[in-house]
Length: 228
Picture 1 (cartoon, helix red, strand yellow):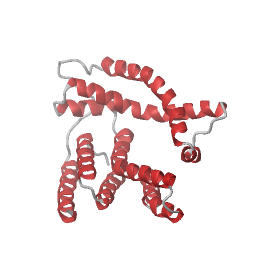
Picture 2: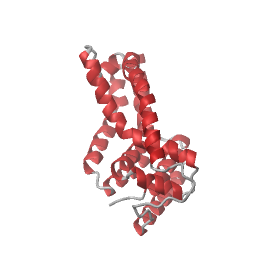
Picture 3: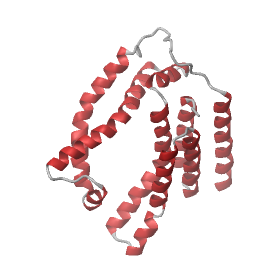
Picture 4: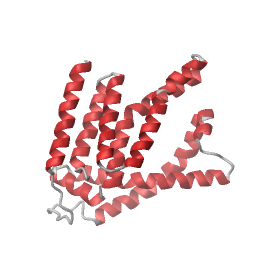
């Protein structure tokens, strides 16, 4: 089942607001369940299983570390895990968009929402960059491996700041070139054109999209009132 990009954007914004403004762990679980339902509806079953396993590990990671006492490094890792959990539902919805939505559909949907051209160009470039980021990570990892530097979870836990430097510095330099290339690609597709663009894809909200959006809105309102 294909979910309209506007429903995904609406859900992402709504879940982001609820998670960051309603300071309650139960809200994080609720947001995860909503995002998980969307992933299943989108037919991304393997991704759903991976996210469930990863979420359970992170959810109980703090309990596991507490067995070793209140060591400073363990508290730091627990804080990082909590921050990842906070943005977890947003990442899941982003996965649906990257896996199921074409860039042309994304641009057309934003134009129908009367979004500013500047914002559309910025979001189109960011949307195109997400799949590229995975490829860049593996390239950087292979280059570091040739230099005798391992980039993995164990090395990150041992030397977090050093591993951030090994990964982020080359990524930032590479991103400058990639951003220019992706921006030119978006401009070639006529994003900056003031005239109304035609679209090969039919961008229209279906009855199922309205039902999904209504369910998410009502369930979010009920759950928020319940936990406050």
